Each structure stands twice: as C-alpha cells, then as structure tokens.
Image (cartoon, rainbow, N blue to C red; front, top):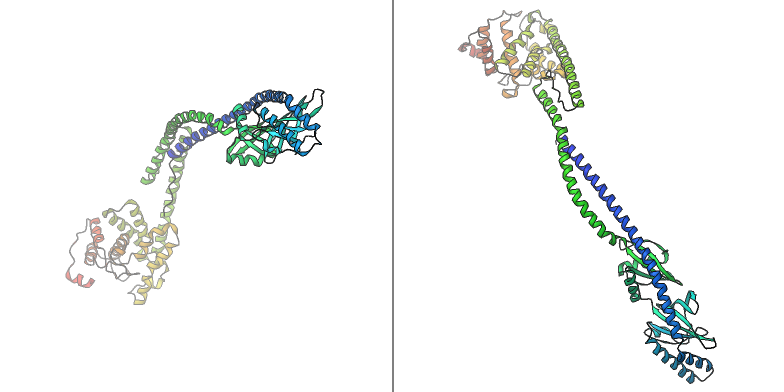
Length: 560
C-alpha cells in the first residue's frame, strides 16, 4: 500500500492564508455578536430600571387612589350605622345578629358595584371578618380572623396582602370611624393577585410580570414551561439580576414589594438581542462574503508567488535526478534571498557529492581490479584473462545497445567472474593435465563461491548474477543451477561467450591457443545449446577482422 501523498505547497499556502482569514472573520463575528449582546443586556437593564421608576410612580399614584377610594367608601353613613348597630346588639339573639349581618352585607353589595375591586370586606375592631361582597366574597367567610399582612401604612389607610387558601389578595384598608372618632371596624378593598392582574401590570410595564409571595410564585405572565423553571428559583431572587429560563437568559428587577409579596418585571435578553444580533449578523455576512472573496484572491496570489519559484527549483532538481547529470548547476530563481541561498548551497553540495562519487568510483574500480589481479596472479597461464574477458564483454554489450549503467555492471562483473577460484586448491586450479571428474566438480564450485563472496560486500551485489551464473547454458545443461533460456540474465550469457572465446584463443599448460577465427566457428557451432546465439553474433560483429563461417558437420557433431 503506497504512502499517502502530502498536499502541495500551493494548496498548503492557499489553505493557511484562507483559513487564517476565515478564523479572523469568525473572531470578529463572535466579538461583535458578544458586544451586541452585552449592549442589549445593558439596554434591557436600563429599560427595566426605567420601568421600575415609572412603575413606582404609578404604584404610588395607584396606592393613593385606592386608599382614597377605601377612605371614601369607609365614610358611608349607612354602613357605619349598620356596623354600630351590630356592635351595640352583640349580645342579642342570634336571629337579630343574623339580620344585622344581612343588612351590612346588603350595604357592602351596594358599595361593591361602585368600586373596582374583586371583593369588599368589613371586619370588626378585633379584625374578625363580618361580611364580604363581590366576585371573591366567598374567600372571606364571616367570623374568621382577617389574614392581613402589612409592613406599611399611611395615616388612615392600610396597604397589605392576604393569603386565603390558594389565593393571594392585595388589600387596601381604611378604618370605620364614628363621628366621635371611635373605631368600630375596618373596610378592605381586595384585589386578587392572579394572572389577569399580572397581565394588567405587564401591559403597563410592557414586560413579563411575576408575583412572588413568601418565596412562592403566585401569578405570572410567563409561559408554562418557563413558569415552572421560574418557580424553582423564585425563593432565591434578589432585587435585580439574571436567570436562565427555557434556554434563554432573562433579566429581572423588583418593581415594588408589599409585606412578603414582591412584584418582578422580567425581559428575555436573548429575545431582545435576537433582532439586534440578526441585523448585525446580516451586515457581517455581507462583509464576510466580500472579505472571503478578497482573502481567496489574495491567498491564490500569495500561494502562486511562493510556489512558482519553488516549483521551478523542484522541476530542475527532478530533471537532474532523472538524467543523473549532477555536474549541471542550478540557476538562481531571483525570487528571494532564501531560495537563491538554497540553490547556491545545493550547487556546492552537488559539487562535493560529484567529487566524492568520482573518488568512490575510482576506489571501487581499483578494488575490483585488485581482486581480479590477485586471482590472475595465482596462475601465470591465466594472467590477464579477467581483464580480456571484461574488454570483450563490453564490446559485445555495445553491439547489443546496452545502456551505460548496464555496460558498467557488465564490465566490472566480467572482471570478477572467476573470483570464486580463490577458494579452489592450487593443485586443482594449476594442474597441467586434464582434470578428473572429482576435480572438475571442485572447479565448478567457483561460481557458487564467487556469488557467496560478493554477497558479503553490498556495493558488489549487482554483479552477483554474472559471477554465479556465467556458466549456465541456454539448453539447461550448465551449472551451478541448470537454468535455461530466459531464466539466465543477458549479462551472464555475454560473459559466458567472452570467457569461452578468451579461453580458446589463449594457450594453456595442456594445449596451445587457437586462432580467433577457429574460436568464432566453434562458438557458432554451439550457439543455441551451449551459447546464446545473439550474443555469439554480437561477438562476431565486434571483431570485424574475423570472418564468420557456418560450422562444419564434424564440429557440429562433436559439440552435440
């Protein structure tokens, strides 16, 4: 599985500059949005403060009106007469007292039709309920203590609240006084603190209203889902602050308080901010689209400016690597001091590498020649054999149009083709007469020994095939592996032909050398069986002074 290719410099530069622009726009958007929300929060707080001042003034005026209304109603002479009579007949028969209470109740019913209150209630001097009239009259049964809670009073009026069962009422009371100043009871105007009352306050304040009594939410204009959440925090509310309701932040402020009952105004900051933030967002979107367009164009321009000279430099390096012309200098780009400095450094580096490579190649070739010379020195009859085989092999390779690199491998491989004979005993290697079968088997091991020697030296690994397989034959009757046909590398075929040719034309201890023409004839005779026919033809072409002739039947039979 191939490794994942990294992105190009153009794409990287484009991505970095464009992403940076996007991140900058995101930061600006978040900052502006937060600033807008903070401004809205401040505006909401100021609006609630203004509502509180306005509501306080209205509340004081309303209190004054209610107190005055209560005082006016309490001046009813018929009601006071009925109350005075009831007090004077307190020890009368129950039937008489019931009749007197009905009289009081009738007077209250007349008065209830003239006042804006949910109930009108009278209590005696001991604050025991005597009678009630109006929509919520049943909430104040007679002969029960009047549940008034008040922490403020002014002159002849009382302002407080009453908790009656599940209902909470706002009470404004005035004493019932006789002409001599004797107090015979109290008259109360009761207003139910329910949702309708909260909605009336909300219409005036233009906000949501919540009425909290003794830590319990008794009425509100909030929706059902946020109402439940507000009930959970109602007991912990202060004069002002924020609270999260229904996933939205709400600012609240206490408008006024009566006894243990507080009246709060609430406004959703998120709802108020939505319009402002939406308008800001739309404006920012237009700005962002334009900015992103400019950022994209700028990113592309910068990316091309950076990547183009580097691309030219990379292409020059690639051309140099594929052509292996390391002595060619790279021209400066002229784009930047850094790139030109890199180019100069690379040119100096390649000059050093080329010099080191030349020295290494020289040492490499000298080492191979030394090995070949060491082998030839063992037998005076084979002196120079490896060098001659190398020259003939290269001549054949040129006729076959081998590349420069393959010719170099062939040249050095031919020099080393018999290196394995270093491991053959002198008695066998330099025997003046014919070899026995056992001695011939020993000689044949030189190919395997040579391959084993070269495998221990990494820089000689490319020549192992030549050294180990140069005695293999096309017909499969060679050694050491019995390879045939295309299983044998072409370089091994070439060295095999060159080796045989040199052996035939040079004298040995047990026979004289043969003329080159005879050697060529014998190679042609065994072409296709012992030797590669194309390689034999290439050898004949490389030796124009020799005339190639068809093998005669006698030699052909001898080579079979």
